[in-house]
Image 1 (cartoon, rainbow, N blue to C red):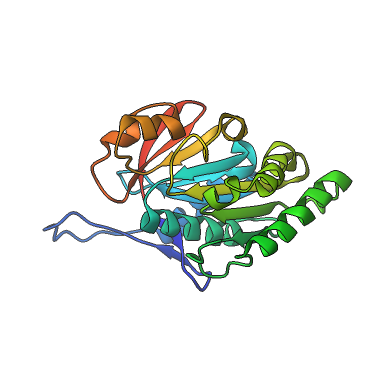
Image 2 (image 1 turned 90 degrees about the horizontal axis):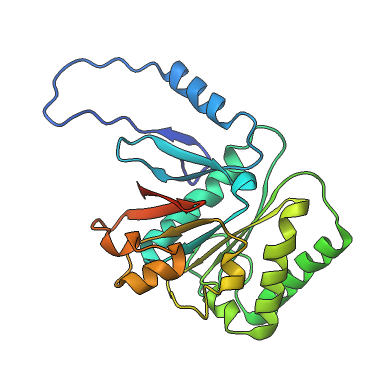
Length: 238
């Protein structure tokens, strides 16, 4: 399993079956070559969990267009931190800028907390989009607890504007909320996010709100989540 530490170093975790006393040889050079091959050609590679066989799931955020996440406060924050770190460290050419907006201060290294600060950030991004300014390096914006924004009409309109027009100049959104309802995950917002993630949901209704399917209601492990892209759902772990 490949992950990124807080200090930016890349961690390779190797697990052997319990009770296995055999000598195992791991070719790390080969493993890193596989990783390099996998991310080659990706504009903005990010780590989005692992499969049950512990293979790391790396996706190109520029290809999927953005990510919508719902449920489980603690697991959500861990996943967002992993996405932010991997976006900064896995990109091969150039660098990816990352802005974190966090109204409830759940994440480290966040830049905007109050409505005034958030409004200023969103307004600036909207102006960049209007001017079609781009330095050809991708720009990742992570917003935790974005439900706080959706409940403010002025902020919500700016966020929707960015979601609908930002991708064309390399601005990509990752939005997360543990509050799942139709007022937060609106149809207009979801239309811009073919890639979505849901942790366990208490009912099939909440699962459908995020994924348009019921899979998330039947997850059994706290660190499991459903990753849906183009209506294909995969169960992954943090």
